Length: 163
Image (cartoon, rainbow, N blue to C red; front, side, top):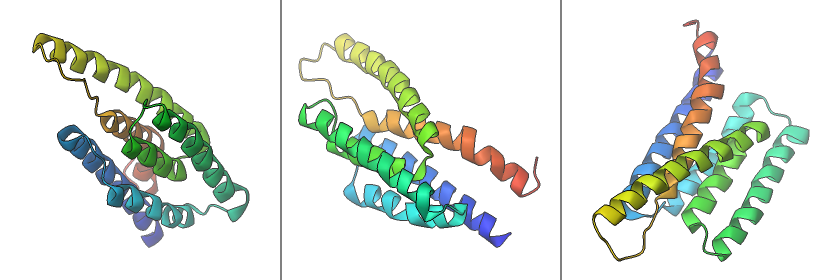
């Protein structure tokens, strides 16, 4: 029972970290390295509490994270994505099961599109001439919270006898 509380405590910590990432990206257009590092460093504890085997489970998590980093680093090099966004998504890839990580990317793209339209409209209405900067950490965090809420937390209510 204590291990279940530890497991879900880690998920709550991840949710809080995602909220912090969203707020700091909105406020400063920056996601701090210490936050991304903390998310990445929490993943092995989550693997252990989830009972993942080193092979193939943990290896698969590493593979997805490495592939995500390679693709996203290319997007960063093309100035399509910020460095903090790349690190946040890579750190999340260590936590989220591969099929759910793909769903996270889809939701992130949808939320990011809506965010871009809203912020672009606001930018035009205020007749600002400077370059529009979209805080994509908000879309990444929203998608991460969606995955946690739909895939990981529903199991929490049945595990502790709520549902």
